[in-house]
Amino acid sequence: MNRLVLALVCTLATSAGCAHSVDKEVTREVARPDGLTYTMQVDATRLEHGSGLGPLAAVTGLVEEDLAAFFRERPSTTQGATRREIVAEAPAPGYGVHVVIEARPDDYCVVVLDIVRWKDDGSMETVKLAPYSVQFGVRAIRDALSALRNTRRPPLTLERFDSLRAQATELARQNADPPLDETNFARAPRSLSGSDEARYYAPPTDNAGRDLRGHAGDE
Image (cartoon, rainbow, N blue to C red):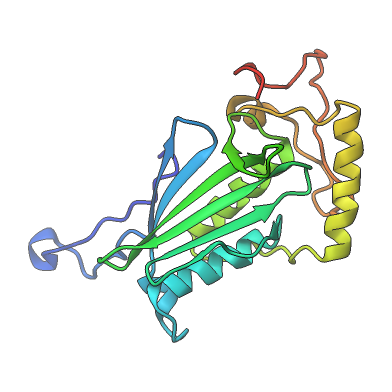
């Protein structure tokens, strides 16, 4: 279904022969072609119940919980009534995620996840290639948001983030953690020891010895 979460709604139960109505859709997602950018529309009413939070705050809280499992959040640059902006660093040096959450009148919130890289002047730029770990984290966050849950991974402690950053920096120095495009990320070998979170994972080349880095041009 290309990451679309769909549900059928029985509007006329008697004529359609449905004994009960089915839950309405929770999220809709569209991947934009320009870089590693993903746009989701999240039904915030599912998160509001029992939380005492409005739609924007409820969705923002879930996004921050999910981000914390893979990234380290920087101070938010925007905290408006209808829009929140979050920037988070990845253990992979120089890369991170820029998230914009905007409330809509129908109680959906639009969540835009951009994989970014920091330029020398400190500004962010979107990219078409990113290390495996960055794309892995964003994929897990997207899956969790689609199900309106957290990633069920503990948040990164400062010590663990620093350890992963040191490992990632050394791998990058050895050119052993090449940026990948989406296609090569999907093909990259997964870690067989998923529970071993003390080590930074960078996939090796495949059995044919081919380089897994993307061919979309140097970033």
